[in-house]
Image (tube, rainbow, N blue to C red):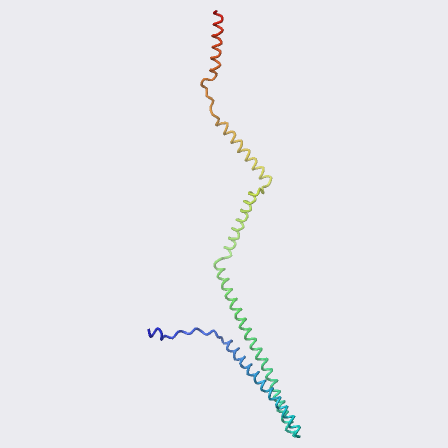
Length: 207
């Protein structure tokens, strides 16, 4: 039990890349420069007010010295603007590089998937499937044409001729299969009637 609860869990690998660290450091430097600019700007305003006060007191040399200090601070402020521009450009480039990297990874995954699909289904298989599909479509069209009466004049003539032949064969078969006429007692009623008439004539002559 002690080992179960006392065992340290393996920490998951950090997802923070070197590019992320670099971007973070650049943004921290950018923020520091901006804070420095604000501080310098406040100092410049103070130096200007001090120079005015010295001029009022007639201390022209000290006022001039203060203005020189102010000018130097302004040059530093201009340099920080250039540094800020460089940092912003670096941050933009690194972030865009990360986007490009993700795009490349996506393309690699897509290409790998395409290769696997191509391995599973070769060009010959695709051509065979397309041929079979085309044959199936053509057969279905033929069936649809037959069912919808879409026959040519020659086909209709052949159909009528075959129908006439079947009818003739059917009639000939019926004639051959007629029942036999019975031969027994054919004409018997007429023969007896003639004999009766003959007997009647003989009786008249005898009397």
